[in-house]
Length: 264
View (cartoon, rainbow, N blue to C red):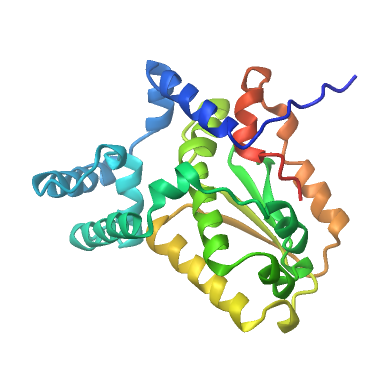
């Protein structure tokens, strides 16, 4: 008999985040999160770290090898340009109130938005990366912007990015026993046309793309674009084949960090 997946409330993310603080103290988990370092990159990461530390501009929460490496990659391993981008990220977080969004923001219209713009996380792929699916061709973004605002959707998106960095990636790393720091994205573009995107909708997603590329670089490294000829049935079949069922039992609670009950 199939075991019923436990139900979690949104507040459970905070409980799981607290649990991670304990788990992170273990040597094994620290080693998993560190992953393997490319010797060619290490001296550049250290150079960027030293540069930021010397000016007192490296907060503890971002004093992380892979975080610094993402900004170096974004700028072609130019240390000075990576520093500038990193500081721009810190400034943006402060001005936009990202920490407050993570702590306090509630997206009460989520269920309605989800019906008008089908999207969400759906298990992991064969390499243990979280899988994110968007059914762009089924989106009614004009209607969506009648039930939410651009500002609120952007805050929702940011809160999801923070969950991915702080919960989904560590959960996937722990389950896969290897460092996970990117997402497999599947876009179902069947039926996409200009009618899907009003001017406000285009402005919304242009803004989100800018946020992702500037402040959350190198997360969407592995993208798979679903053929316009593929049916929704085929997309579902491919998603279910991504071996979500192979997650270890002891990580059932952590699996919530990946899916948040967001089947698409």
